[in-house]
Image (tube, one colour):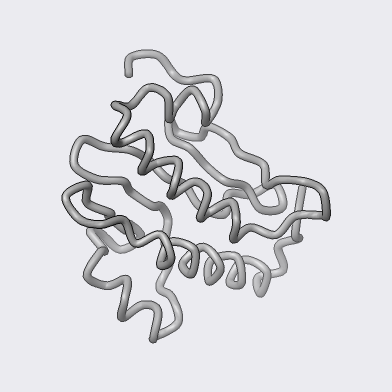
Length: 129
């Protein structure tokens, strides 16, 4: 992908169909976990050349497609029980890697998103922009 996609839809469409389908599933799980005022959907943006779902004008979570995996960024240290599940998927301090060769843990992505949202709200970040 040589030029910057204008939207998250364009970004996802730039991948091979099998990766695009996985990205759509990850996107749906993230969007479902971000609270919004009734009747609205979470805001999405392209940031740093990858997709981001926003929470209160600040990113909640970025996701990106790569040749061998989908990355979630930044994923802070989570509550202990959830962190134990996420730990095998961590590639770096704030990075979670979902390898294409393995089944996609969509339910886990949803729980990670919910935990990140809870952390952001504890920090005093508002629900929506």
